[in-house]
Image (cartoon, rainbow, N blue to C red; front, side, top):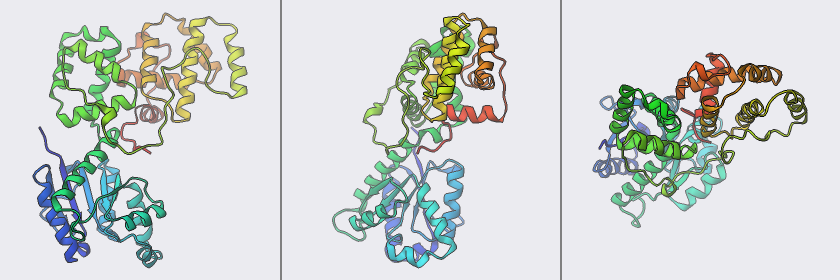
Length: 388
């Protein structure tokens, strides 16, 4: 079982303060029993501070150019980081720095943090009033209070790190895991995808070889995107057994995301736009029920994407429709053009081909792969997109 790699980063000016040095060095020692914990200061040349070398970065202190630079790199490279301000964001400290170039940089660092660890009730209250980041964890500082020990603080930090990682699975799935997930989804939807024995064995082997952390992230992601049942079906068809974490019991930070419930509708138009509804009524008047249903799914998925309410489940619903529905492709194409969703349909075909393996023989449109297709894919999968 692979151990998490954690970097504890302390700017030199923060490390120069005795109580801060004691806190970080003792915590690094306590954490090392459970994770691969590296401790580095901004003057340290022996320890890597490359975000890609770690699962998570923990930054101590504020008002540091080196910390802002590291946080910027970590954010860009999708490595979550935790901030412990050490009391340096109290109102009097903010006023002292407000007119400096560092103020905006510190604000951005704090806002982008996957979590902010405060060390006391007063610090929590004043930080909440700043409204810079809602993801707050109160974990006391054992240097400043006898109410906790370094071992207890380290244990609480481990829980916080786990909560951060579990809350950010969509940015942590690597390219291989994303590809494997798409293959599993196709096999969970379409039994014909298992007919290629060599491909089946390759996918089963890749699934078996996922480490515990990669598997946990995939399961959480599948649950978030309403894909758990499809993932389970794929595993049964492949004959692979892996323990399924109880996602409902996993502690995570709340997000603002809200998805449309149930499967992608092909029965009624979700949009209340009167012009669109009239246009749909006009276009549908001359076509059969099956083609109408296909176009309604396209319109509804387009509407959900505009409102950021489309779970990836709805793309798999569209795959089912394309794969298993006999339709008049020319009629669907003509209707899509009349409804101004033809370009959208072409790009959807490309996304379904790339992620789910849909082949041209089941596409009512030619697939179009361009920059907008890549943006569409990201909007549907949320791969690499920070949760809000």
